Length: 127
Image (tube, rainbow, N blue to C red; front, side, top):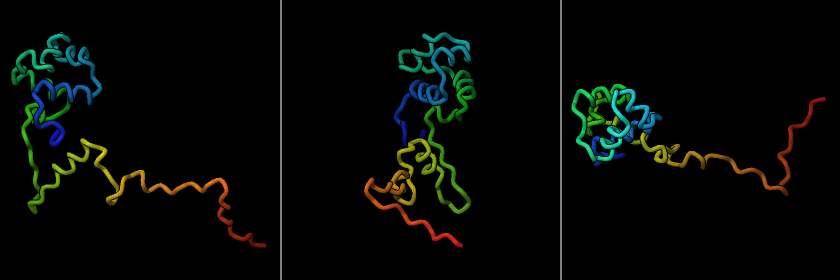
């Protein structure tokens, strides 16, 4: 979630990952054994964030690292000290940033011939 909402509260992160997973509040609340009202209050900040054991359960159900729910920045570096993981992660979280060799993905399409244009000649047939 880096770059997408480092400023979000724990409740807002829970809501983000719940929606991304395709769960309604009712479904997620049922999976953790609490009411929809409880979850709605957590997500909107009208109730204190859940305890760490409940956050672990939520992270397991939502299939996200606990650190992501807590808003902890995680940097993973390879042996050559090049830190590409956050860049890739940011790109995957924001598909509009994706491009093909500096061009927008849809700009590689070839234009269709206009109605009055002559068609491309076909190769001569062999007799």
